[in-house]
Image (cartoon, rainbow over all chains, first blue to last red; front, side):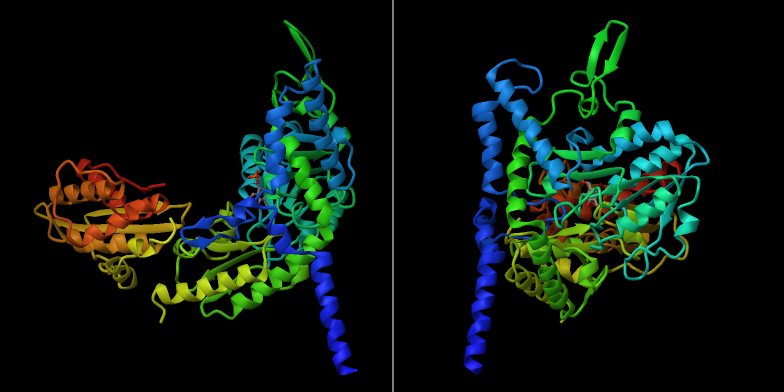
Length: 428
Length: 154
Ligand SMILES: Cc1ncc(COP(=O)(O)O)c(C=O)c1O
């Protein structure tokens, strides 16, 4: 009986490893992961900054320029028809990916940053006045901070912040005194790029809407790592970047509720975004093109399609599970190392795979340089969240962040490197 | 970057990083300037006492990475007792070493030569430069009588 049991367990584990999620097999789809840094194999743990690209994405970019290159929505020839169809197909796929929004509601931008700027400039200038309030959280990336600071400077509207507690979790205790009746917009990240915290966006969305505010969710860190449903969270705007989810750089998205987008003025003016132009007159194209002036990043959008296929074939639930295991293992291994202090929630359910830490008195930049000499790529600095890092009482942190091709072995390498760094920088 | 880590963190640099010199605050400083690299989070304060054209005493307080701390500590050692003119020449030499160029007027750098390894790590040059830029900006402001408030190398 006993031996049978063990055999069964091993068999089951084996089947799960191969049938489910197999990072070793996934790795083979990412050419960059075979390169060396000096004499070491690359261990890429800077996925919150940008992820690597699978062969299918690289090939799609290449093949677009080889066989399809043409401007979109303009030509009446075969190439233009094909590129327009592929470009719009990428939009449709993306709209499905975030929970089945309408294609008209999904604007193709350069990145999450541009998407937020469109909202702040176009919706913000029209709807925000002195005496109004803009609500953010203390954990926002500069992309969801600086456009609002600028808008507040311009309009005289006030900024208010939902605070974080000592675990790096939003403290909603006094939320009613923060999201007040004069609040016009509540804009927050779904997942912190520094702390890893996953925020209760549904709950905050309900409070925002009850106060009559518009609700923006920054999905730059969540869309790549967990199932996302924009409708379920009832977001009025949702923004994210393709490059953080296997896609090319220079492609991002702005989802906006149709009636709100229709009420907004364009952000940029020029070709594509117009319907009729006379010397003294212009009117605007319909959604989504009203917000897409000029020739877009056609190759980038088309290259994003296979990235979505890749994520869909793995399944976002499985990706989230894989990262939960990696994150738990990372927290366990790093906690054993003398000198390491980890920031953000320890509970795996309420966090994603961006793990920030400090290592005694060693400056994070020295750590990053040291680890790089062993082929390990991490991020060090303020992660474009200066106020948050200052709030943690720091000038900088080191951050390891994971994705589908990472394994426990990468984390072992990181842990070994960190233990070695402790000795190298003079702590015995 | 790759494997030449020990070329960056040479023994002399690690010694200055672990035991920084010139950290004690000056009672009354003639020259004072602060440097900050907000992207890195490095912060430094350089103060000098000047007597008959010479650096009589110096204090360097730095919170930052090994390179910026060591560079500041080496600076404190190197310029004590030097004339203002000599200090400027040393600083110009250090700048040249860091960006891999030849200085107009070469001077003996001694231990400071150890900073040479930094030029293979372009992103770290600004760390090594912070103390020197802060010093020179401070000196120039003092000479011209303009209040200089804050330097950066980012
Ligand atoms: C939470 C969050 N929001 C926004 C951004 C901005 O993304 P991008 O630089 O692609 O515009 C990032 C990127 O680091 C992020 O982590």
